[in-house]
Amino acid sequence: VQLQASGGGLVQAGGSLRLSCAASGSIFDNSDTAWYRQVPGKQRDLVALITWLGTIDYASPVRGRFVISRDNSKKTVTLQMDSLKPEDTARYFCSLRSGTSGRTYWGQGTLVTVSS
Picture 1: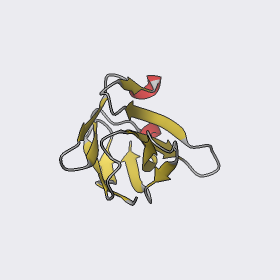
Picture 2 (picture 1 turned 180 degrees about the vertical axis):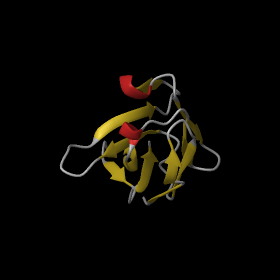
Picture 3 (picture 1 turned 180 degrees about the horizontal axis):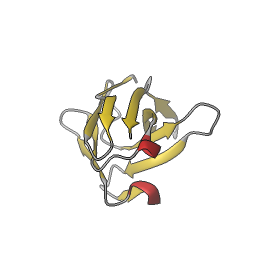
Picture 4 (picture 1 turned 45 degrees about the vertical axis):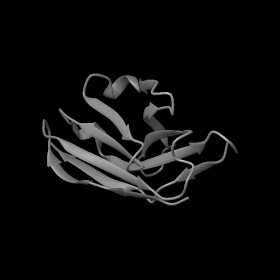
């Protein structure tokens, strides 16, 4: 399984970005997918999760501003980020956890920078 994230960049506070993650392999449909973010020197934190059943959850700092979605036919998971704040600046990683093996796969990360 390989995950390819894209869509990061530089944006002003209040702006929007859309992150996408494309997965290869055949385990996407029964796998949970999520976005995490990490700043240097700190742990990787969960941003948003969407399970293979469609259950969605968000970290408190992004609830109401970010929307996660997935398209099983295209094997993609997307994170729409609105009303961005400087504290959203981080490298964002997509992940996939296989419902069969329990193994978690990670993308390479995409950098999001929000200027004030």
